[in-house]
Amino acid sequence: MNILVCVKQVVARDSVLRIDPDGKWILDDGLTFEMNEPDTYALEEALRLKEKHGGEVIAVTAGPERSASTVREALAKGADRGIHIEDERFAEADTFATAQALAAAIEKEPHDLILTGLQSDDSGFGQTGVVLAELLGLPHATIIMEIDASGNQLRCKRELEAGWYQNVTLPKPALLTIQSGINKVRYATLMGIKRARRKPFTRYTPDDLGIAVTARQRLQRLYQPQQTQQTEFLQGTSREISEQLVAKLRFEARVL
Image (cartoon, rainbow, N blue to C red):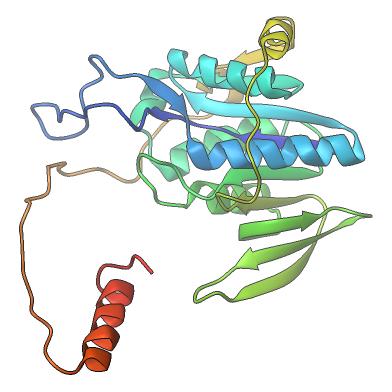
């Protein structure tokens, strides 16, 4: 089974973010970067499927030069090959431009399955995997919690709202976006890091793939949200207050 995993490099979660003067994005000065957390679950699921069914796992990314380290991390964890579509404009590219680049590279590779994380930690649109499936003309399913890849079909379990799940069956090849928490992510071992240096690594430019990095979506302004405080007293019996509190935690704070 040949599996391609789309990974993205994002700003590390503990970084201090500063908005650039024109309000279009954040300043790169002093930032550290890491693999997008939802993509780590997609990579782990691909590695587990390879261990069970054989084949190879290919990690692919579209990003600036620094994104190569994210592909190297995937290789260190067990991916067999890496593909990097390199261009500085991908750091601020929209969903369509990124998906178009990924599709152009993936079309060159035989594949049975494409996995992506559900969304990215920076923009969080959750659109790249779905747009990529449309560009490649593949069946797809989102928010996947389980995968049974026996035979020529994929039986998958999707997570819905309010604790509900949906079972779907897709033919191969297909694209799945993986829900965070589907598995326990492995760490790269010292031996894996050494082996990653010798694994095949292909670099493309947009010109190599015959595509243009043209954004269809533009960010107008980025700003820090205003911090506000609000106190509300709940009235009624103990039972009524508890019911009101649960409702507010569930529907307003959305922590339940």
